[in-house]
Amino acid sequence: MNTVIASPSVRALAARKGIDLETLGRSLGRETLAREDVEGTTGGGGGGSTPAAATSQPSADTAYWDVDHSQYGPVREEPMSRFAQVAAKNLAAANALIPQVTHHDEADVSAIEAFRQSLKEEAAEAGVRLTALAFHVKALSHCLRAFQTFNASLSADGKTLILKDYVHIGIAVDTSYGLTVPVIRDADKKGLYDIARDIAELASKAQARKLPPDAFGGASMSISNLGGIGGIGFTPIVNPPEVAILGITRTKIQPVWDGDTFQPKPMVPLDLSYDHRVINGADAARFLATYASLISEPKRMML
Image (tube, rainbow, N blue to C red; front, side, top):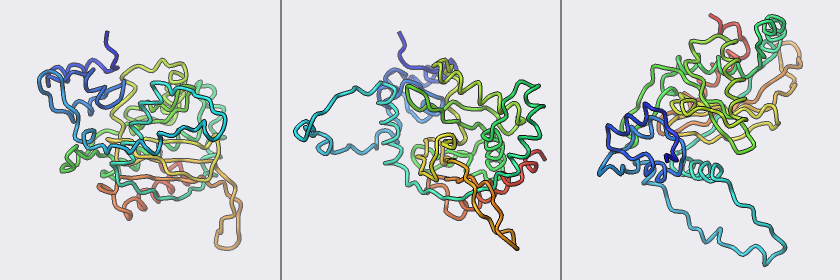
């Protein structure tokens, strides 16, 4: 019985390359494999081999964790789920291997809120719950078309930049069993209502643990939205093979100078983490400034 989740096309690619998905999954510490996992692997002997990124993972000195905590007071033990263990390994590897920088900015969302209110009845008739996240996905899709380096992946050997002619956006979903990141396909070709439907459907299936294998993998970039929970900013970890990730936190009313006086404006914090091997600071600042301008004037996204 297969324990690794992979789409038929991924299994076919693995078969052509002579890669055993079960072995590859164990080497990566993951249960779900996407096309890029297989493409970055060299087959051999039917057993497959670990991608360069995985083989170069530093081994941690476990002495720091191997402590008898009970000597200091009462403790309880709770085993981490398989899902949480896999996520922990992936996050640790990504944080160790990627020279990551986070650029912070903010955007005025007053126009988005007004636009959403104007579409409220129409959206309801269409059976759509139009959230602010749909606007963020739309704005990000525009930016990924305008800044090709962000819509790219670095090859395992670090010598080739793979530029993508599609825009797929991952949406981090907080579930009872851990964080999962399903993908909205071709976000740049979809309208706000279609994007809103995709967000609702993916989130619902994620909560019910009913996401199909093809809901994962291939994202151009991901969004981690903590706006419904709180916070004023954070440093999201880049999810390889992506080269950047956008974090969003809670909107807050702030005084903004309009040239004559301070006006109360709803401002959303934006946190852009990026792989410094591919993206430099100036490009990150331009990217997020363009993104913030689209959020501030959402009708520009419709052009």
